[in-house]
Image: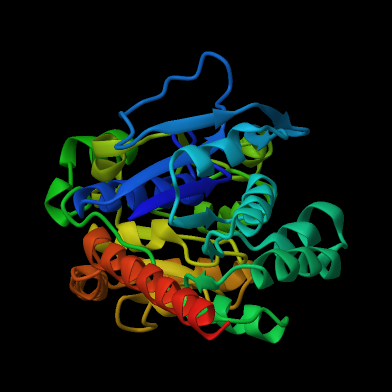
Amino acid sequence: MRVVIVTESFPPDVNGVAHCALQTARHLVDRGHAPVVVAPAPAPGSKLGALAPCPVVHVPSLPLPGYPQVRVALPSRRLASTLIEHNAEMVHLASPFVIGVRGMAAAARLGIPAVAVYQTDLAGYARTYMGAGEAAAWRRIRSVHSAADLTLAPSSASLSDLEAHGVPRVKLWPRGVDTVRFRPDLRDEALRRELAPNGELIVGYVGRLAPEKHIELLAGACRLEGVRVVIVGDGPSRPNLEQALSGAVFLGRRTGDDLARIFASLDVFAHTGPFETFCQTVQEAMASGVPVVAPAVGGPLDLVAHGHTGLLFPAGDADAVREAVRALQADPAMRTAYGTAARAMVEGRTWAAVGDQLIGHYADVLVGRRAKVAAA
């Protein structure tokens, strides 16, 4: 199958959309398909990192005002020409919003089936950054996804949200996790002594440091005696967080095997953002055998079994975050049991398994298109 993956983000960017697009391309190649990626060009001078598994077409881009880590694609003829030159049989739209909207329009003009992957809670971001605009965000989401042959939601909460806002033809497609890279035996006692020289309980957050993540909710945990909070990632909120989270260790952006070693060396993983459509870092923590504290909303509801693999708290409740950490600090046996159960829960959620599910969705869309043509 000849597939063009049109994505709002791709490595060297480090985020859920970029990572999922990369894993999708890898799996398609592994299964003998022929993908091409179309993505915004990275910032000048960026290190491209690991080689992409397939050709990547970059379209011109500019940094998002106020958030330069995010690049926004500019109009370009490269997108439509790539669909034509690749003789695309399927267009995969990864979190369509800017370049994805153009990809949807080009696919429609050329009569190519399109699958849209919902991955970003744009309505939640609108509330966070603008204090309004949620209704407008949903109108745009509905417009883009309604034009696709199929929309894939990463969690049951996202699927319900999409259907409640009038998006048709929605199915569930979760995310995979690399259970070889992220595993418990990477726990590093030397790293733990470096991060917590007095033997403190290590509570870690991994992800973008931005307002919508509400990482300031960890302030109460920072004040617990015998707890060391470790923050991995970068973003516009870092200066404020360094002041708000007294005593926390900020490690900056980490990737690959280095990140896996950090995950496995945590005692507790804490995620605080309420706008996660899936939350890949929760799944990576679970694969690392680490109990999770996360909000009882959105993607984490499908991942964290409260009282079995971790603890869920009411979104935005700083006191509940602190008390969840305190409970895990007080009970090492519970931490061990939760971590073991977390690893067992995700062992079958490999990228190969969910990649095959995606190819099945492609096949269903192609069958549906052929049936429409035959009936016309």
